[in-house]
Image 1 (cartoon, rainbow, N blue to C red):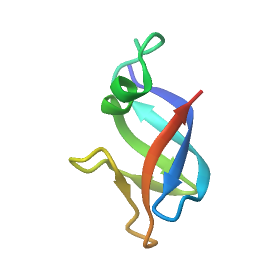
Image 2: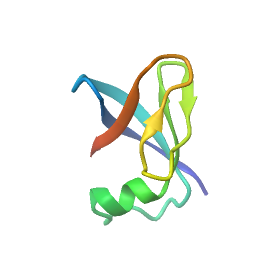
Image 3: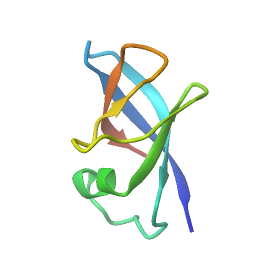
Amino acid sequence: MKKMIDIKVKDQYSKVVDAKAVLRDSEIESLELPKLVQKIEHVVIGDEIILPSIELLFESQNTPSIYRVIEAN
């Protein structure tokens, strides 16, 4: 079962943005941030769904922004 969590992401200009992340596995309560990021199926920023790249970054198709997850709640 998939789970949605609140996260904070930072773009390449160091702007921090609130976002949502959809995780592939709902059993994530004890994972540290690096392992949690590997379970992200996609992030939602505003109304845009952004898929991860190989480097676990999230590149917007609508804006020139590239995001990195910095915090999960």
